[in-house]
Length: 271
Image 1 (tube, rainbow, N blue to C red):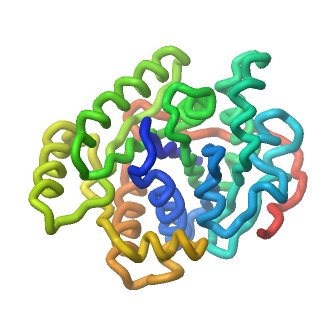
Image 2 (cartoon, rainbow, N blue to C red):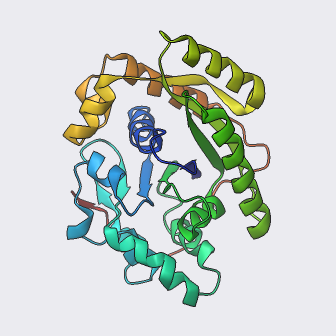
């Protein structure tokens, strides 16, 4: 299983949009995908029409109240979901009383690593918190999601430095890749910024860029990936291209998560 974290130190850059729709695109390639919602706001959970407050959630897994298999939910969109609830924010406080709290998610994912090809982690905007540290500790690839808007490049450079420091501090090994989002080819500013991003990040940046789209907002509002709302849209094409590019990516320094032998506790419950 390859573990991808979708990261930045600010909201509004499209992390959740990428997490949900990339997961669906990989699922359409007959890949086994687990989406993990690490944001207490639970936007990825809502984007898949799931109520994280009414079932076991990621917080229960991180605090050892339940097993990861008991918390995973099967969606009608070809992907499984480990949902978030507002109580996930309490893990920041609880982690102060734990030994190596940044390793909890990594250890939990090991239990299901032989059941999925990909795990996508939708991270919160707080870059220096224990939830983001858990994501980076578990990751094979950290995808820095950057909107093609004013000041985005400077923010992305600062974010990358933060995540690199976190990786060094906890001894994590993962590749960092950069993905441009919210791209509007009609604006000169957007085109120039995309060129600047390619120039600055070079081979670390995906060739695919996610374009600004009304369909993406409509899909999120309806609680489904864009592939199920508008399968022939440009947005669906963008994520299909990203899935192809990602599948061809070779890890330089990262790792694939290897499953440990555990007893089976049943299949994911449906939404």
